[in-house]
Image (cartoon, rainbow, N blue to C red; front, side, top):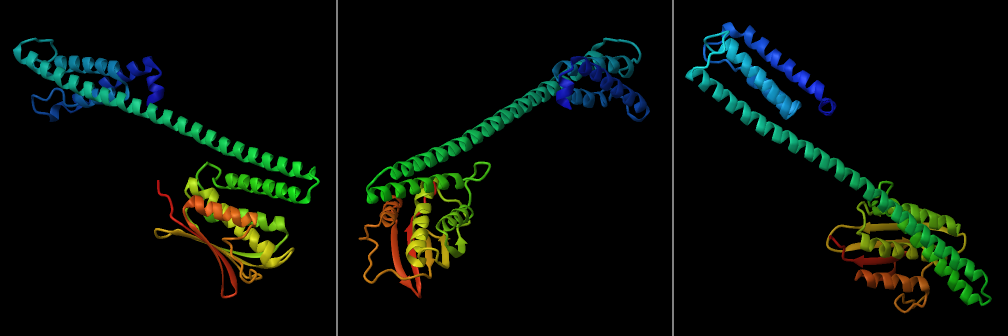
Length: 326
């Protein structure tokens, strides 16, 4: 409302005259109740209201009209513009008080308007930043997906089966990273809790493998640190895919439990499946499997430790790492 009034100078001055008139009528109506010596009692609030809502010049107009009304009607001798020393002193006091009121109130009003403008500017910048951030993630994800698809397409033209398999695996993993980039943040660009995007990624991986998996997710209620999100998620997906391929076999079914304990000084990611056990003497630290080599590289990047063990009929892949707080 104040913005609309401010945009119309004629309305501002008209309201200043109206407020001065209301102050005069109120003072006139209460004249019989006030003792002598209070000619400005209703005029000071009128000036304050004008200064706050209408601005500097309308407040000066209101103060001038109120001062003249008080001088003529309420400063003895009434109904005459007398200018003796007592009158000059009373008028001087009035001018001083309204000048201080107008100065501070108008200054405060300008500061509030400036603050409001800064907030609007920062809000617009924040919206622009969020839009650019979401667009950046979208483009990165799309570009990674294109790169993965190109690798797979290139592999189709390779005669060597091993080379074709390597290119196909590389393309698939690049596409997985693209999915991670897409799922790490919600629709407004804020980091999503781990279990939210983990559930979507694992369901997609199970569907792609044609496996019937009874999946249980535990913990992971907080977002991952941006620098740790991709390696932690890759370890989870590689461990999950390992369970689908080696634990359940093609088109197999079973149970998988994924948990992320984010309490304490060390975070622990566990991916457990009730499928077939690893071969006797199997050592994940010496395996030449591309998936396990990726897992070890990601654990090293995190400064953590990766382990695989058989526990109570479950094959458990466990990643321990120190979380980043910055």
